[in-house]
Amino acid sequence: RKEVEQDPGPFNVPEGATVAFNCTYSNSASQSFFWYRQDCRKEPKLLMSVYSSGNEDGRFTAQLNRASQYISLLIRDSKLSDSATYLCVVNMNGGSNYKLTFGKGTLLTVNP
Amino acid sequence: GAGVSQSPSNKVTEKGKDVELRCDPISGHTALYWYRQSLGQGLEFLIYFQGNSAPDKSGLPSDRFSAERTGGSVSTLTIQRTQQEDSAVYLCASSWTSGTTDTQYFGPGTRLTVL
Image 1 (cartoon, rainbow over the protein chains, first blue to last red):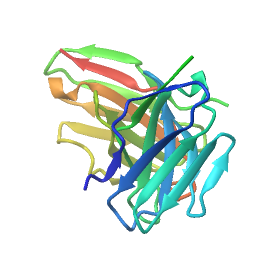
Image 2: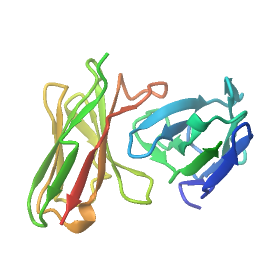
Image 3: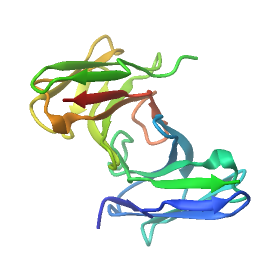
Image 4: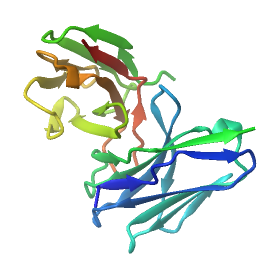
């Protein structure tokens, strides 16, 4: 299994749609999980951390299933401005957060 | 406040030349990271600094790559005898510490093209 594997995409959805991204990770000892967003030719920016209990930030919901080593991101009522590449990111290094492992990303295009 | 800055934003060089890429982290951030993003690939960890020390250099692709950090602030990534496969976007990030709750903030990157 690849260290961090994401849906290859791309996803093309109409405005207002709900879209879900999936991610799996290989190291069961991983402790920190994140979703980053990267706009075209820009740097990645943290979208949200992912907690075991699941967490929500407005239209965005992140879920973690440690048993299945699976992370998801749900975007509800998608906007044109949500168009970007979404990166699943996992800390494979246990207690220290320095060694983040990034998935290749899933490109989302929201169409009018 | 000011974010992470990197220079140059673009660098075109000839195969075999040396290049230096610079990163200015967010003021007060003790941890600094270098990543590389090649076309169609995910971000690849290169090296991590805590203060001026580099506890983990395991991601550096070859001995042509080196990095240093001085004064707990600015970092320079040097690539000697560049090869075409070194072409990529080199991203720097910084965080308060390397703790599990500390967010890494990325700079805009340096796009390196080796002809």
